[in-house]
Image (cartoon, rainbow, N blue to C red; front, side, top):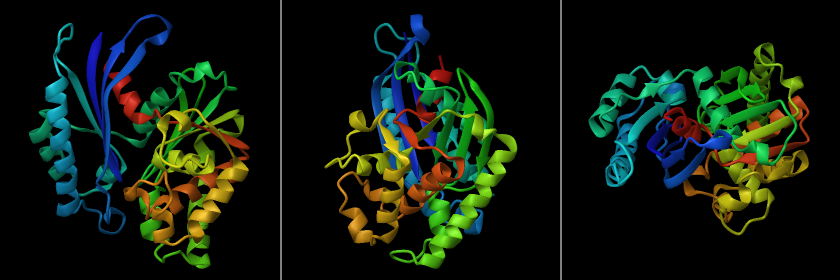
Length: 315
């Protein structure tokens, strides 16, 4: 048994997974010890300024200090060696001119150097985390795994392992800051966002043969929140959302509802995390355009993603 700690620092959130991994038969088993998420909006303003703001860095470091305490508390129990820790940073940090400030802060907190991974590496980790347990559902292969983040969206096609992949700079925070500025956004703003997203999806086709995919697997908070709304859940329930199947019609209706709602109306939705209220319309729109442009009738929603992939990579 190996105890590991995985930290995923994205554009919108920073997340922690402390888990025990048993490398036994059937590909092994991962058991959660702690799974935490904080909305810190590290990438706030990066699309415009190219820099991580002091306020965003401090929000992120505050959350990380709490995570470091949890890692210390759970590390090295009976039957375990020293806890293995890996910190991965993605889109916002890749794009920031002052990412050295982020790196030095993380080293001070965790004692490890964060890995600012490429879009391709991010896609591979997302694929690993999302598909490890899909065999139970027996979905048709190959899968197109789509991880909709705050600053970027990763696409990876594969069956038992990651294959062709591409990362594109469309995400729920980036599209909101760039286009969806009114409350609710105007038809022109939505149209401009659609044009931006569709152009990026066309670029994905140049590297990833998306038409070969038989199952669309959707990851991350925008997708799971859309699923929770589509399932009409009174509050967020990861156990009901995980491995649910949401149709394209449901996704389109939820997207329409979110884009026409005011901030107050979105905040009143039972499954909505307060940190997603202002960006969920853009996240839903990205998922909706993916399904429309690539012809998917449904999406399988996974609560396991790059965070789980980081944990598995430590085995």
